[in-house]
Length: 335
Image (tube, one colour):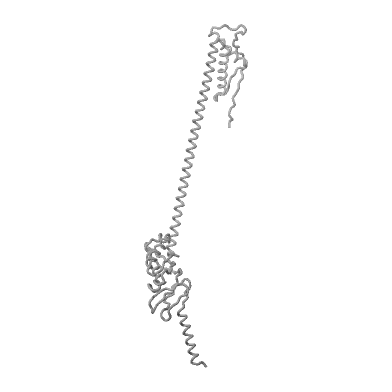
């Protein structure tokens, strides 16, 4: 049986344990506790061991000071060009001041979520669909700036707001796909046309350079040919001058050589003429020599020289009834 003294001891022990637990508070890392004195905020407990005045002070709010994540549900948004899209996102925030977060706003998570949703619709509704789909970073930056300014009095910092998905209606997606295909085909045709134009330009440049090189080659060939003719003419003039000087000096052999050379060249040109079918040539080679000798006699008569006693005058041989050699040129085939 418990006696009255035992019961009293047990009551005192229980009361001491309750007082001990209400006096000593251990705050975990990443949290801050607010302390209220008869319902009024007095101070904030930081992580570690803290002592409270029993029956006077108590813990008001336990605030998570770590960065937290809020999922933004899907929102139906009407863009500036009257296109309906569904968008959702995610928001990251961190409590910087436990007192403001606990006593400046009621329901912190719900307040942040509604603030992000309303600004999401406002920012996306002020943009065209094409800008909306291609400027997610700009949308996130605008929403972050507006929400962070609005929640500054709440003792929190909105660190990031990201747009996860933007889903246009299916018929709009199909129209965008057709538009993209038409745009790609247009660019392909433009690139093909530019390639054809560049190829034509390169071919024209090549032909131009080819014609320039051919013209330069012809000009160089004409220059070389004219130079060769000039040198040949100079050589013939020199030969003629030397022959003239030899004839003036009384050297009959020079004129014989000169006349025989011209005679032979004329006979070769006559034989090579394309409009000749039959070429008549003397039967004996002495006929050519006789003709040269006859020309030499004329030269002697002209310059008034006597014929050499050792070389009797040569008379042209009379024609005989023997036929001359005929050299028929090759006839082209009948076919």
